[in-house]
Length: 438
Image 1 (cartoon, rainbow, N blue to C red):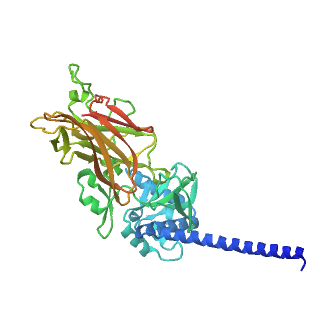
Image 2 (cartoon, rainbow, N blue to C red; image 1 turned 45 degrees about the vertical axis):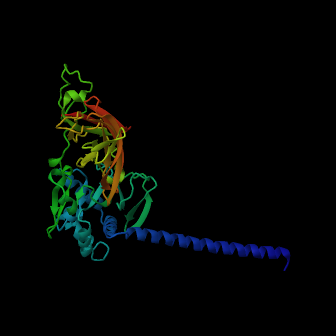
Image 3 (tube, rainbow, N blue to C red; image 1 turned 120 degrees about the horizontal axis):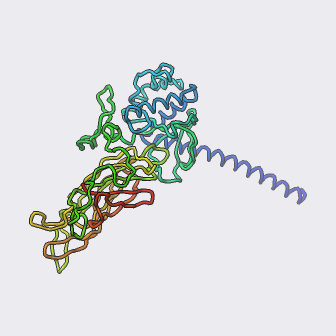
């Protein structure tokens, strides 16, 4: 064989080998993606139910004309009765017939949507996910729909690199959460305002929630009280700096000569209102749900050692507000009107340990999930009886859900102005918080 022919032979063999490897790699990549998606869909019993329900709904949308519009009507139905969000609960559908579903119930329509009986599956999924719901995302006034049905499996909506999964005609796909959705769609999730039975047992009053509906087996689905307008803690919007929402409404007495305005007010510290340009719940989870944790120095036990102070007991306390729902990112005022403590910095026989000179407020957006511990630190000074003023830097831990987003925190100084218009704090450029006394 001539040298030229030898070169051509080896070149052809190399090209064939490279092409074969390329095909094998493509097949492996495709298989690995499929395996990854399947594992994610089945990562827990709760998520399995969300994925399967989304799959069935996506098939129904493709199979029945007008299905998107019928689902939209169902999502807006509960909102029209006073519920805060545009979503419907799967467990509330039962056997209720609707014209949009061909005079069938939604659940019965989905039973046979892909040729297999799914009635038992849906009932089983509702035992694991009693608050499974379908949220309409997008503009309810728009007539444009995507045929995608997304799944909220606890993704991090604050991470632009996160992937979100969706079904289209029963086939699972994924895309970056940062991809812009230009039309209406639906997302299957466990409602963010649901209060499970274990949590409800340990809560009282408004925090215990209200029963939204009950199952035939006696289980009740409770939601946060603020999710229903009749029990909402929000009051009508007032854009004027001094209007609405409580507070004394009067400036300090003109004869008051105290160094700090709070010494003249002597009322209860009140987280009056807030407004934001970002609800921190992202496009995928509807309206925001916020709560606050207020931390202050209280009941510090101390001993004097070598001219210094050693804390021997708990020096910090905290209160957590109820969940404030329907938070809008349009810079309109919301009014928690949450009063915490009567601030007393003067030590006396009836108040042997004075309160510190600072309070910290931490704000979170609630996304649910399992629990985790969050630790905050407060630096403050404390006036002790006969021993002067000493500085402290102490931590305190409290429990939040691992899906909750930390929005920001701010320090309230005792000597900040606190009259009729209160004092505005800006922990984030998009958010204003305002305190007063009442």
